[in-house]
Structure formats: C-alpha cells, structure tokens
Length: 135
Image (tube, one colour):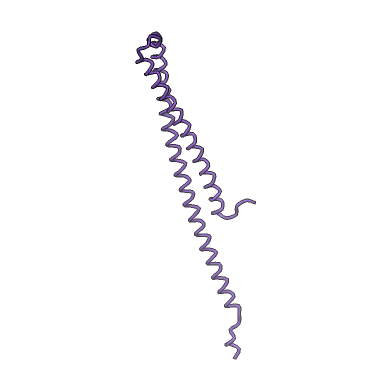
C-alpha cells in the first residue's frame, strides 16, 4: 500500500536518503582503509630503502620506483577521500532537510486533524436541539 499523506511520503524519502548517506559513509570508510594500507606500504618501502642489509641496497632503484607509485596512489586516494567526505556531508544535509520537512508536514496534518475534530464537535452541538429551547 502506497503512502497517502505527505508526511508518510517524506518519511519514506528520509529512509531512502539515510540509506544513501550510509552508502556514502561506507565508500568513505573503504577509501580511508585503502589509504591507510598504502601508508603502511610506503613505511615498509622507506624502511627497506634505509636498511643497511646488502639485499635491500641491491633493489634501491626498484624500491624508489615503488615508493613513487605508492605516493601517486596516496594522492589519488586523498582526492577520492575528500570527494567522499563531501558526499557524506551532502547526503546528511539532504536527509536532515527532508526530516525537517516531514516533521513540519506531520505537524500540519495533526493540526488539520485537530481542527476537523473541533469542527465535527461544533457541528454536532449545532445539530443537537437545545433541551432548554423546548420549554
């Protein structure tokens, strides 16, 4: 059954928007985790470059190239992380605006229902003959 009132429709939209917000947060978390892994790899490569063991000194050029690639990857991930952070903020703001609209719509619907109830009471009072008028 489809929602009938405006507040029900907005409530459904709020749920969808919150789900989009969660998806953006998960993307941000994944990007952050990838960036941490790249950082750890960079630390290992730096340790290998600075090592005094003869095996590592033989591969200094390869380590240097690997560090360059990791640095580029870290820069790409930093940009993606920034984009994801903005997306999370954007989705959160949308959800909050929709939630505010939903609350306002619910308040207006409640007020309309109360007004209708008062009008119904007035109609009943006016439709019922006054017992004092018979005398």
